Image 1 (cartoon, rainbow, N blue to C red):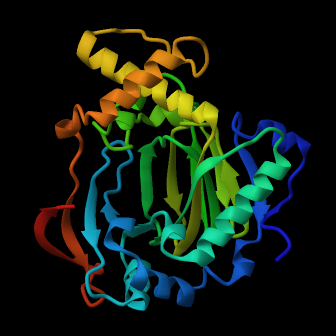
Image 2: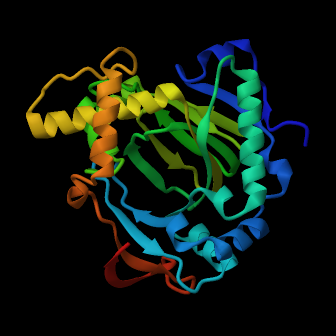
Length: 309
């Protein structure tokens, strides 16, 4: 395969990181995202590298349960997902399979060649296997994000990364680990969303921290996510981290969130010290696992006694 990224041009390069960019890709041609390849990957995926979830139906009421694969084979897990209402997310796949790390490196080598002055680090690749008609609720991510559709179809709603769609307080809570990635959603937000119906071979990159939600079509979906950091993203993280500490501990109401300026350096130092001392760690969200994949069960899962992950 000569390249992963296709249908690129100078306009998309100028939009990268600032506006939503739709482009094409050749990930299917690698052979690493077939059901057989993913079944093998599921079986070798360490427990701390995956989440499997089932969810409710109302975007305004984000019910979300955490589970485990258990003893199910990779093929049986994919079959259960195809017949159930689940979302399997294998994270940082390159850390335990060098083949996917090689693809990740190629993707960002191409991005950096295509986007002037782009310099990325802390890059990662994840793989999503999800059921027909499931959804990922309204949420925001901290690093730069791209979503690559490999099999099936999904609708992506991308919202502006600013109030009222994303408040400073909500972003700070996510960065501090005080809340999950889900943030308050109202149906009226959809009037301001960019909506994309992704087909296999298409990919999206959206602005930093852009809130988004996903709805699968009536088919099994296989997708890839990539994450990356830049110096600007790192500065934004440090500033928002420090702002969250200042807001919650000193009552500061309107600290600047700009990722540049003299205020970045003391806030970066505050964020680093806070993280190093593990202050506020006890307030972090703790996930509970309360179901297991079971291909023979009607919905592909069985309840188990809840335990902290």
